[in-house]
Length: 195
Image 1: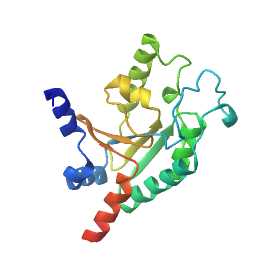
Image 2 (image 1 turned 30 degrees about the vertical axis):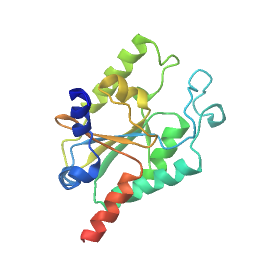
Image 3 (image 1 turned 30 degrees about the horizontal axis):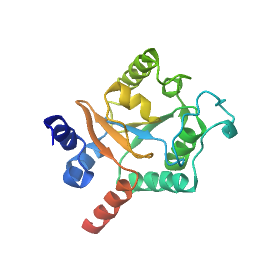
Image 4 (image 1 turned 135 degrees about the vertical axis):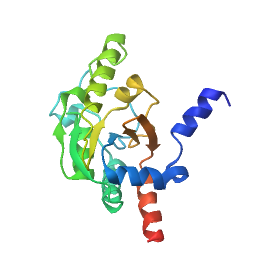
Protein backbone atom coordinates (compact mmCIF):
# COMPACT_ATOMS: atom_id res chain seq x y z
CA UNK A 1 0.00 0.00 0.00
CA UNK A 2 1.48 3.42 -0.93
CA UNK A 3 2.52 5.62 1.97
CA UNK A 4 -0.11 8.28 1.18
CA UNK A 5 -2.91 5.70 1.38
CA UNK A 6 -1.49 4.32 4.62
CA UNK A 7 -1.43 7.80 6.15
CA UNK A 8 -5.00 8.48 5.02
CA UNK A 9 -6.06 5.15 6.50
CA UNK A 10 -4.56 6.19 9.83
CA UNK A 11 -6.11 9.66 9.78
CA UNK A 12 -9.53 8.33 8.81
CA UNK A 13 -9.32 5.09 10.77
CA UNK A 14 -12.52 3.31 11.75
CA UNK A 15 -13.85 4.77 14.99
CA UNK A 16 -13.26 1.53 16.92
CA UNK A 17 -9.50 2.13 16.65
CA UNK A 18 -9.58 5.44 18.50
CA UNK A 19 -13.19 5.83 19.59
CA UNK A 20 -12.57 6.68 23.24
CA UNK A 21 -10.28 9.64 22.55
CA UNK A 22 -12.48 10.90 19.73
CA UNK A 23 -15.66 10.61 21.79
CA UNK A 24 -14.03 12.31 24.77
CA UNK A 25 -13.02 15.23 22.55
CA UNK A 26 -16.45 15.44 20.88
CA UNK A 27 -18.10 15.53 24.30
CA UNK A 28 -15.81 18.45 25.22
CA UNK A 29 -17.03 20.37 22.14
CA UNK A 30 -15.26 22.72 19.78
CA UNK A 31 -15.43 20.38 16.77
CA UNK A 32 -17.27 20.41 13.47
CA UNK A 33 -19.25 17.36 12.42
CA UNK A 34 -19.63 17.57 8.64
CA UNK A 35 -22.40 15.11 7.85
CA UNK A 36 -23.04 14.17 4.25
CA UNK A 37 -26.78 13.83 3.66
CA UNK A 38 -28.19 10.36 4.30
CA UNK A 39 -29.01 7.72 1.68
CA UNK A 40 -30.92 8.71 -1.45
CA UNK A 41 -30.25 5.63 -3.53
CA UNK A 42 -27.97 5.94 -6.56
CA UNK A 43 -26.12 9.26 -6.49
CA UNK A 44 -26.68 11.31 -9.61
CA UNK A 45 -26.20 15.04 -10.12
CA UNK A 46 -29.53 16.84 -9.86
CA UNK A 47 -28.36 20.41 -9.38
CA UNK A 48 -29.02 21.50 -12.97
CA UNK A 49 -32.77 20.88 -12.74
CA UNK A 50 -33.20 21.25 -8.95
CA UNK A 51 -35.34 24.11 -7.72
CA UNK A 52 -34.80 24.84 -4.06
CA UNK A 53 -37.94 24.35 -2.04
CA UNK A 54 -39.36 21.96 -4.64
CA UNK A 55 -38.37 18.51 -3.48
CA UNK A 56 -39.89 16.77 -6.51
CA UNK A 57 -37.15 18.37 -8.66
CA UNK A 58 -34.39 16.92 -6.47
CA UNK A 59 -32.92 13.63 -5.35
CA UNK A 60 -34.50 12.98 -1.97
CA UNK A 61 -33.89 10.66 0.97
CA UNK A 62 -35.23 7.16 0.62
CA UNK A 63 -36.60 5.07 3.51
CA UNK A 64 -33.09 3.84 4.38
CA UNK A 65 -31.79 7.40 4.46
CA UNK A 66 -34.58 8.57 6.75
CA UNK A 67 -33.95 5.67 9.14
CA UNK A 68 -30.18 6.27 9.05
CA UNK A 69 -30.60 9.99 9.79
CA UNK A 70 -32.76 9.23 12.82
CA UNK A 71 -30.35 6.56 14.06
CA UNK A 72 -27.37 8.92 13.68
CA UNK A 73 -29.10 11.62 15.73
CA UNK A 74 -30.21 9.16 18.42
CA UNK A 75 -26.69 7.75 18.69
CA UNK A 76 -25.06 11.19 18.93
CA UNK A 77 -27.49 12.09 21.73
CA UNK A 78 -26.90 8.75 23.49
CA UNK A 79 -23.15 9.32 23.29
CA UNK A 80 -23.54 12.64 25.10
CA UNK A 81 -22.11 14.69 22.23
CA UNK A 82 -23.37 18.28 22.58
CA UNK A 83 -24.60 20.00 19.43
CA UNK A 84 -24.83 23.77 19.07
CA UNK A 85 -25.91 25.06 15.68
CA UNK A 86 -27.05 22.76 12.87
CA UNK A 87 -26.49 24.34 9.45
CA UNK A 88 -27.60 22.57 6.29
CA UNK A 89 -27.52 23.01 2.54
CA UNK A 90 -30.94 24.25 1.41
CA UNK A 91 -31.52 21.06 -0.63
CA UNK A 92 -34.39 18.90 0.61
CA UNK A 93 -32.19 15.85 1.30
CA UNK A 94 -29.79 17.81 3.50
CA UNK A 95 -32.48 19.72 5.38
CA UNK A 96 -34.42 16.49 5.98
CA UNK A 97 -31.27 14.69 7.18
CA UNK A 98 -30.59 17.50 9.65
CA UNK A 99 -34.15 17.69 10.97
CA UNK A 100 -34.49 13.91 11.34
CA UNK A 101 -31.12 13.65 13.11
CA UNK A 102 -31.12 16.80 15.24
CA UNK A 103 -34.67 18.10 15.23
CA UNK A 104 -33.68 21.36 13.60
CA UNK A 105 -31.79 22.91 10.70
CA UNK A 106 -30.85 26.40 9.62
CA UNK A 107 -30.38 26.73 5.83
CA UNK A 108 -26.80 27.69 4.98
CA UNK A 109 -26.22 28.98 1.45
CA UNK A 110 -22.47 28.37 1.70
CA UNK A 111 -23.31 24.62 1.63
CA UNK A 112 -25.42 24.93 -1.51
CA UNK A 113 -24.42 23.18 -4.74
CA UNK A 114 -23.46 25.23 -7.78
CA UNK A 115 -25.10 24.26 -11.07
CA UNK A 116 -21.76 23.08 -12.46
CA UNK A 117 -19.96 21.09 -9.78
CA UNK A 118 -17.21 20.12 -12.24
CA UNK A 119 -16.04 23.69 -12.84
CA UNK A 120 -12.63 24.50 -11.31
CA UNK A 121 -14.03 27.89 -10.24
CA UNK A 122 -16.99 26.18 -8.52
CA UNK A 123 -14.54 23.86 -6.71
CA UNK A 124 -12.52 26.83 -5.49
CA UNK A 125 -15.64 28.60 -4.24
CA UNK A 126 -17.02 25.48 -2.50
CA UNK A 127 -13.68 24.84 -0.78
CA UNK A 128 -13.36 28.46 0.30
CA UNK A 129 -16.91 28.60 1.65
CA UNK A 130 -16.44 25.41 3.65
CA UNK A 131 -13.21 26.73 5.15
CA UNK A 132 -15.08 29.94 6.13
CA UNK A 133 -17.73 27.84 7.89
CA UNK A 134 -15.05 25.79 9.66
CA UNK A 135 -13.60 29.02 11.03
CA UNK A 136 -16.92 29.46 12.86
CA UNK A 137 -16.21 26.32 14.87
CA UNK A 138 -17.59 26.81 18.37
CA UNK A 139 -15.09 27.61 21.09
CA UNK A 140 -17.41 26.55 23.89
CA UNK A 141 -18.81 23.24 24.96
CA UNK A 142 -20.84 22.34 21.87
CA UNK A 143 -20.08 21.15 18.36
CA UNK A 144 -21.13 22.71 15.06
CA UNK A 145 -22.96 20.35 12.69
CA UNK A 146 -22.83 21.03 8.96
CA UNK A 147 -25.09 18.86 6.80
CA UNK A 148 -24.07 19.07 3.18
CA UNK A 149 -22.84 17.32 0.09
CA UNK A 150 -19.66 15.35 -0.56
CA UNK A 151 -18.30 17.96 -2.99
CA UNK A 152 -17.46 20.52 -0.31
CA UNK A 153 -15.25 18.20 1.73
CA UNK A 154 -13.66 16.65 -1.36
CA UNK A 155 -12.56 19.99 -2.79
CA UNK A 156 -11.57 21.58 0.55
CA UNK A 157 -9.37 18.84 1.96
CA UNK A 158 -10.72 15.41 0.92
CA UNK A 159 -11.28 12.54 0.95
CA UNK A 160 -14.83 12.11 -0.29
CA UNK A 161 -17.19 11.27 2.58
CA UNK A 162 -18.43 7.81 1.63
CA UNK A 163 -21.02 6.37 1.80
CA UNK A 164 -23.97 8.75 1.93
CA UNK A 165 -24.52 9.59 5.59
CA UNK A 166 -20.81 9.53 6.44
CA UNK A 167 -19.46 12.24 8.73
CA UNK A 168 -16.05 13.88 8.78
CA UNK A 169 -15.00 15.08 12.23
CA UNK A 170 -12.94 18.26 12.08
CA UNK A 171 -11.10 19.56 15.12
CA UNK A 172 -8.82 22.52 15.76
CA UNK A 173 -5.98 20.69 13.99
CA UNK A 174 -8.00 19.67 10.93
CA UNK A 175 -9.84 16.52 9.88
CA UNK A 176 -9.58 13.76 12.48
CA UNK A 177 -11.85 10.89 11.50
CA UNK A 178 -14.54 9.68 9.15
CA UNK A 179 -17.50 7.93 10.74
CA UNK A 180 -19.89 5.93 8.59
CA UNK A 181 -23.66 6.19 9.06
CA UNK A 182 -23.84 2.82 10.81
CA UNK A 183 -20.79 3.46 13.01
CA UNK A 184 -22.57 6.03 15.22
CA UNK A 185 -25.14 3.49 16.50
CA UNK A 186 -22.35 0.92 16.99
CA UNK A 187 -20.39 3.43 19.09
CA UNK A 188 -23.49 4.09 21.19
CA UNK A 189 -24.07 0.35 21.72
CA UNK A 190 -20.41 -0.14 22.68
CA UNK A 191 -20.64 2.74 25.17
CA UNK A 192 -23.80 1.35 26.75
CA UNK A 193 -22.20 -2.10 27.15
CA UNK A 194 -19.16 -0.54 28.86
CA UNK A 195 -21.60 1.29 31.07
